[in-house]
Image 1 (cartoon, helix red, strand yellow):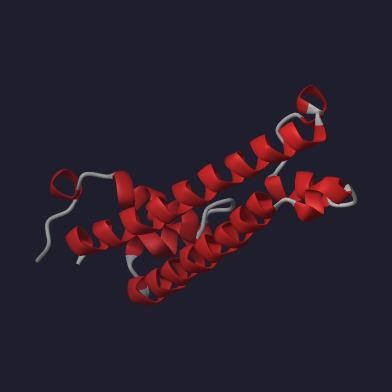
Image 2: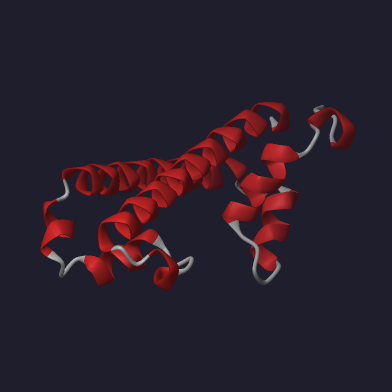
Length: 125
């Protein structure tokens, strides 16, 4: 199962990368619209959007609205893959370990399984 699960884990990571890229684009647009490039630093897109929402030009910007909707859609899909993956993993050793180590969890599991070499670390029986 690990060889196939690896592909599912990569799908989760693809969704995650796409969401983060979308957030970065939102931040870039909001910084340009606000004229406060240096002031805002590296806050999350949601945080920056929340702070800038009072500005009328931000509310009216159709591109920011579209990207925020797109980001939410990607995030929902990302969470669906994560939930399905947890159900499939059940009580596998690596999943049990990720649950028991403080600071790790399903995202760490998907990262480990998405980037490890299946052939080098596990043989399916």
